[in-house]
Length: 323
Length: 262
Image (cartoon, rainbow over all chains, first blue to last red; front, side):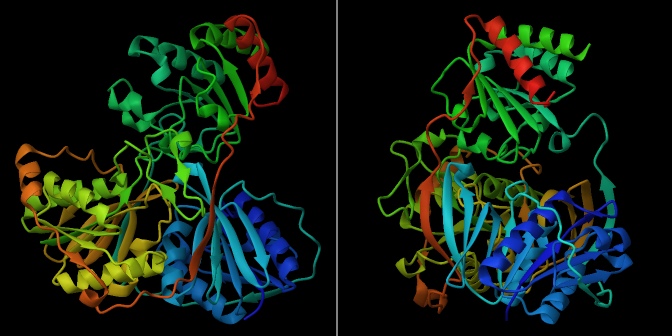
């Protein structure tokens, strides 16, 4: 067993951005281990994606077939097992999506491998794989030693930087994996989420309010700010518990996990369960009258002040800038 | 209908991160003083789902926990919410079990309970956020597993129909029983314990099973915790200056515009 194998995801015919991050992380690890790097794609149509998924792989494994869409764990599990058998890697890396979160642990259980999911850092220490993973909603970082053959990790989106692909001459291996018969699990239908408005998890900008808003009568401040920015509206758990905001807007552990480019947290103190939902946000701005609020430990930019004074001026200036 | 619900006791995630302290060795989080631990949120959703299924189809619910003796409190709460009985797996030898080990231990206990139609787990735990244990249980018991489940639609003697969340929406799946489901918070709002339930919980005897009861040694861990460390507690945020709120608001808009974020 030697080598690092990275599995990419395909969406709309192209490798996802997260796949390129995993490829870059895999390349760095393979270099540190002094072992070869291989890539793998599983999907219904890999014509475009196989051209674009380039990470300086010694070998790129392709498993193509119409039975990979819609997603079933069984199909991916069988395909991944075939690739791992062909490649015999010591380490296998994956993206961290709703799909990989479903089939990768099943793969680990099937192969009796050590697996840590949602890692933000990887290192090799004398051949051992050492990974870092946020726990307790990101308040604590856990460092784990992973053993087993192969050792596995899924990587958090945006935790690793993609790097330009090298122009290596890679060998492409196509594996034929027969469609496995659905045994005890039958897919009846697949339904896209209601397209009304931007879904929180897809939103590029989110304006969210918390307990510091003090009362439902002030919620219009949040709605006006989100309208000015073309943003989605979110909230923290106390707002839902109080019945002021529908639970579909709740961000955090018991709500939605989001990954916007800009997250504007207004009157949100930053409890563990809320911070857990915004770990993937790129830039966090906090507006809070309490300079000691925990949200400021996560925020990139902070405004210590009364949001009822800050937001109207902010909104007016946004409108000027956008005019 | 015989249902097992796995229950993990966790540090209350509604506390601020600054309340989280580690032991000197950096191996575990010290339970914050004066803040009682809670049932993992998704596990509470799983229990609520089990209670609704029992109301509709009849049957028995067994809450199954693994951990220190203090974990009994959460199992009592599960009984107070309506579970028929509870079992705690507690053996010092299991302290360092990883997801695979915990999954195998829970699977062995489920096998010992016997004749189970449905295993309901939370989709993940709010403390370690591992999201693996349910799949190791399913593998050990050779059960079909579906997670994260946002709705249990219906159940007949042979199958359960569920909605599974995917990135772009959901899938409707029919799963043959016995099966394991990872329950998500979209399913329900867990009930509070009733007075009658609380009294039942007070009387309940919760057996504690140890290694000899399961006939299982501590499985060798493939994933070993080396070190926990807390994230920086100090703010590294760049503060937007201004004497008045209005000045700060304008400065913030300019800053975000300059960064190309808006």
